[in-house]
Amino acid sequence: MDLLNILIVDDEYGMRRGAERALRKMHLHLHDINGDVSFNIRTAADGREFDERMAEEQPDIVILDYKLPDTTGLDILDRLMKQPLDLLVIMITAYASLDTAVTATRRGAYDFLAKPFTPEELRGAVRKAARHLILQRQARRLAEEKRQVRFQFVSVLAHEMKAPISAIEGYLQMMRERAVGETLADYDHIVDRCLVRIEGMRKLISDLLDMTSIESGQRQRVIATVDLGEIARQAVENVKAEAARRGITIDLDLPEGAGIEADRAEIEMIFNNLVSNAVKYNRDGGRVGVRVQEVEDEIRLDVEDSGIGMTPEECQRLFRDFSRIKNDKTRHISGSGLGLSTLKKIVTLYDGDISVESRPDVGSTFSVVLRPGSANASR
Image 1: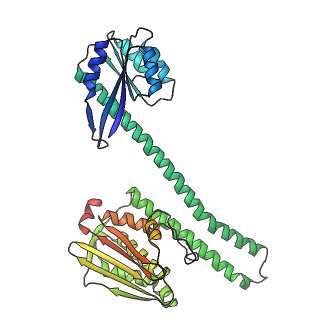
Image 2: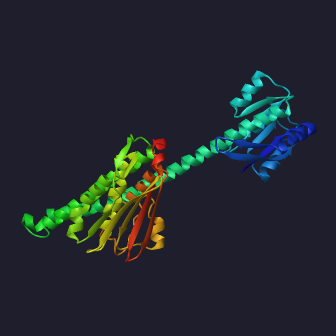
Image 3: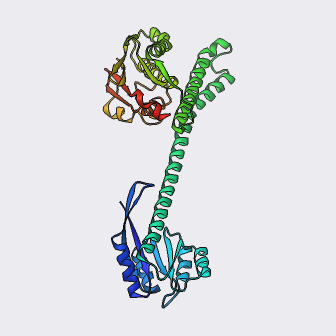
């Protein structure tokens, strides 16, 4: 619940007490932010007391009389507007006129009430000011969070791109200086390393495009019946050569005719990412198990490997953007750190879950649960 401080500045005791009673037990529920607001009320009789209250605690809303014994509301308003204060002013006066209202609003007053006003009119003005103030503050917070996220994103992206670019630059410099020989064959291994680095950058760019298209909601989704067996077999086929080269066996356990109402590209991303990771982070001579189950209204995919595994702490970081597990066992394995975080976003579109169980040097099992009935609602 938000608590807003209101300062009532009026030289009439009865007006101060009446306004205080009208607002003391007032509570608001703002549907825009699904939040509640209550108020703490203080009063001041003149400009001197106003300054004392301001020194004690800055109010959020000032209900300010136009005429005061030692100053005017407009003079106080001018002083407030010259300071970087996060508050709103509601002017009140018995000398109401169009010119007075225009002057007050031009000088920064949020609203204007003419005496005499009813308690409900006062509460209505405060309700409007409180809503405006809280939404304005929330918008600023969101803008600052967005700026921080953008800064962190660019920083991480620059870091991820800097290493491969520097490596390729170093290799090219070696070739220019003929550092390892005079024939083209002498540089075959350098060209191979450059190609590996370039492929890593291409994968990073591809993963970034996948992630941003899903997060922005701009990607056109096509929901149709998808054959899970076909996609699972294709995902295995994509890594078959690498698995064979390293002696890794892949077992498929698929129910006959398994299907799901989904966007085909999204389901392909899930299978391709999990199966390729199971091979990439496996040990030579290891195994991968891919199992699909239909349980009531859910589809469950489990991809198990006998690879390097992870600690519980590493598992907790796994589904964050740009999160990669870096240790002696993974240092030679390339990756963008975006694949699993993108999968988590995709799984959310199906009101699903993704989790991992892992033990170092034993292996990992990634589990995805999809609830197909929610796919259409997420379009």
